[in-house]
Image (cartoon, rainbow, N blue to C red):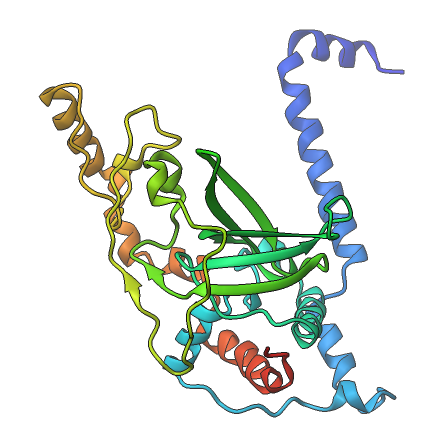
Length: 307
């Protein structure tokens, strides 16, 4: 039972109670996390300990040392193997297990090399389709997420309507992934095609694949597409897009000048981010860890399935 002084304090200062409760809940969560979470250093000592009965866990992986150029190429080809750089989402054990599942999946299905801007054909198992499978052809406009949650979006035009399908790359329902045309674009994401004329997203469903030669540099498609009339799904005029033509359909000269000033505003342009080392470190995996991960991937890639 609260005392009279406690009731008086609650009546006089009701706004002080919720922050105190939130702080107490936060402390309880931190204490419970520290009690039920084993540090990665402790797990690593147990894994490499001579008392460990499993010799496979004690055996250190010996892979070829990669140089910085090879690591950069792996970052472009296989970005999903790098874990989430956010330290709040890092878990070393789950990352290792996910990479093992990804490698096992690649041993059973050919997942070719492709980039944003490449034209793909994906065949998935569909129990409601006449042949128990469905095939969709489209241009890859976006890739996101890490590990087993890595996704990519294909876009095409069906019956004069833009259609997009998001696929999980390591989904077991995927039967086949074909690269019909391997190329890159000037931007890392082509989501602005949603606000462009449909002719720039149309890919024939019966398009035949082109011959892809290994060891040849991937060509870059330097096509610039025009934006359609407003409204847009995003303020594309505020982005530094290299694959979009300069927008000229302004309502007035004053609106054009206002948009140009807003793009150059420090809070929008953020010029300090180019030299922000801490931000770059938090948003990217450091080269040493990336070299270790891609070294193991390179060692096991010889066992991957290649059609």
